[in-house]
Amino acid sequence: MHRLYVERFGQVFVEGKNGPLPGFLLEHLLLQDIIHVAAIGGPRRGGCAASCRPRARNLGSSLARMARKNGTPLMAWWEGGMYENEYVKEGGLWKLKLLNYNPLWHADYATGWSHSRPNYVPKESTLYPKDPTGPDALMAKRPLWPDTDVVPFHYPHPVTARLARLEGPRRLGV
Image (cartoon, one colour):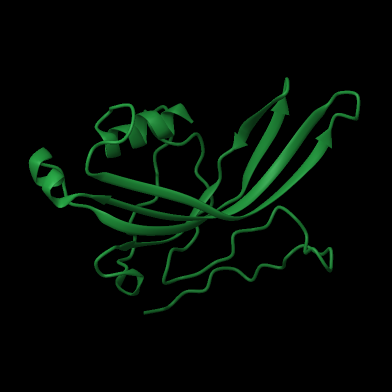
């Protein structure tokens, strides 16, 4: 987590400073959370595990005059994605076990998602430690808008109790 949020995002978005920069906006909204908690290790062990599936809506921007002043590129974008995270409760504290973010679309703010360019944010390809801020493992590559896919669910259908049958990615073919 430190590698991703402090080292990678901290260098990219806030020039290595602790906290936001004047003139930079980064909103990361989590919506429609579905959380399941289960006991693990038996009732006397007191352990718990949880899975959480929220949608993410992100927007980011650098103020034009601040970008000119700092000599940084002007940025303004939208993003949407889905998390399928796993947590574990150890010693009374909830800890993130797996951060599994699946971006679904990215777009420039000015032109919107109807003009999204392919590979807006390139997928990571180099692992840690070769990339000091890279991921521990590469996740399955999912298509981005305008192609679509369903991020697998951690839970069965609430009415039928069946697992969702996924058909696979749907490609625009343009």
